[in-house]
Image 1 (cartoon, rainbow, N blue to C red):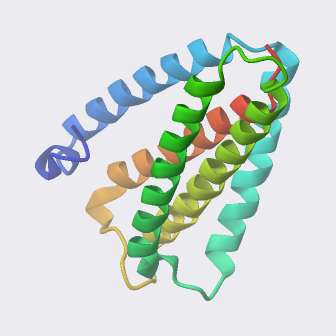
Image 2: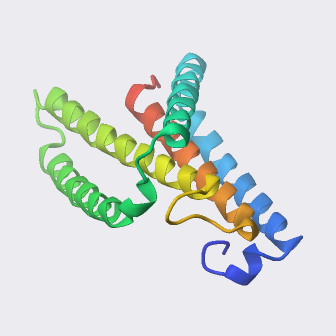
Length: 169
């Protein structure tokens, strides 16, 4: 709703209500996924996520490179990751249950997860620079809810990918 309806995300208090509903829903989904993993795995992956996000945010703030100009590149990378994900899905379906292929499939899963994590990290840089401003493309002051939503989604998705890569069930 917040992405598609510009009028909603700019009108107080409805923008806050919509952001709260979305935040609660995504938090619930992330909690259900995290409940499938051991407590130590969740805490370690949370720590890794915090370190990654702090490092990426510091880089996005201080770098002279304007990542807001790279939206076309990010779109192209999304297509590459999507097609690679489809190829991985077909591979998983074709080799499921065959002895000796578990390690190969796990490596393929890790490569795909790493590509998704890299892409999400680039999106975090892109969104951070748009929220902070001072670049070619940035969000207006009225778009604070939309900016918060973008950053929140980036961080949660990075956490879920790291959890999927390194978590023990």
